[in-house]
Amino acid sequence: MQDDDNLLHEALSAGARSYVQKSDAAQHLVSAIHSLADHRPYFTDRASQVLLENFLTEADKVQYILTGREQVVVQLVAEGHRNKEAAAVLNVSIKTVETHRSNVMRKLDLTSSAALVRYAIRNHLTEA
Image (cartoon, rainbow, N blue to C red; front, side, top):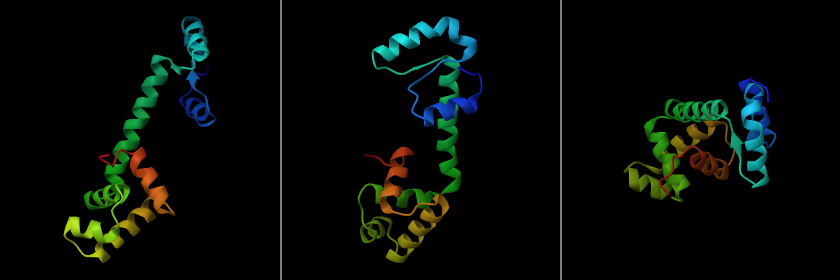
C-alpha cells in the first residue's frame, strides 16, 4: 500500500497477487478484496503502469545484451535444436554455435541449458 515502486517489486517477489497503493486505497480497496475473493489479481492503474514499463525495459535489455546471432541461437536451443542442427539451420560450424551459446550463458550468468530455455521463454525469444 506504499507509493514506492521498489515496494511493488518486493511485494511481487514475495508472492503478492494484488497491489493497492496507499494513495488509492479509498477507491480501490473494496475492489481489490473482491478480486482476491474470486482468486483474481488486482493492481491499481499506477501499479499496472510500473509493471508494464519494467517488463518493456527488461525486454529491451535483451536486445542490447545479446547480439542478433546470439538471440537466434538461443531461440533455436529453446526450440529443442541441438548444436549440430542449429549450425545447419544457420549455415555455420558447430563450433560457432557452441561459441555463441557459451557467450550467451556467460553474459546472462546461466549455468544450464534448462536455465537458458527458461530465459528464452520468459523473454519471448521463442516462436513456439
